[in-house]
Length: 344
Image (cartoon, rainbow, N blue to C red; front, side, top):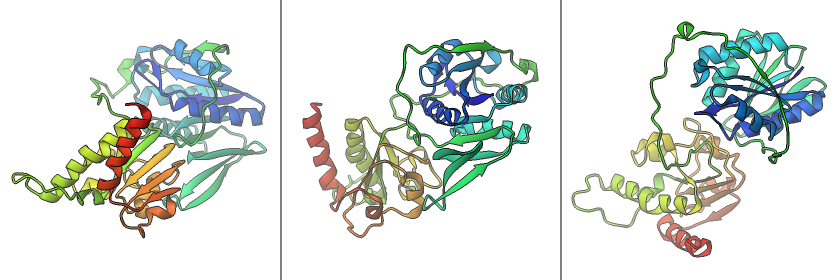
């Protein structure tokens, strides 16, 4: 009996967010009086299992089979379900990435087990798992409990739990198992990956600098051949105001839905209810009014700074620090000051 933590991997390396899952799993395991078992599927599994041991796992189950080198739901869910059926863990836990959500939900359905998704806090009531979840676009926090004697499935929101300090001297007991499905039995095939290089992922970012509809209020004049001047100004604003600040801080660039819908920046930068939900250590909102849909995606940021020339903008009610100023006046000055202080 233990707490299973699925360790997400890509190209033979651990997804850093899985360290958060190991920490959350250890909290539950300590309360239940059991250990943490890391589940590692795919290439380089043994080395990743050892790394999991340095972040809280006491045992690991690995399957270094070619069918598991790239994530595909069919072989991953089949193996996880078999492990649950064979070992009856107290809890199965993973980070709520796209893959984690899909895998945990599939195995919970296969085993007819209860599941809580997107927990931001975890605790115990006896052997019941009690989770805090955000509802109504983050305006309300609710508690849910999984009771009974069966395995309980949980996904946690990324960056909601702090990883343990790495213990490089920790050891781990590793068990190797065979894959459940052969390649012939797997319908989906992966041909290749396309990966953007040099950009910080919004979901993993510790710092995010976001721009909103107000970025269009650039006092500069568009060149004669710029076409739609409003869109030109906004695109220019992201490139010359938002991105330099983000690069200075090693941050990701985000955007509100209004900025995305207006064509100022691509959809994959959108933060909000219909975009990405983020939990950075620092979120800087530039010319974002702070509609409830945007707040749903960033209200759990640890520190929020708002820069907006409208002092009545809703974003100021959520921010720890607020600057009432035009972003075109304040942000470049902030970037220059950071450049001096950081020696860049």
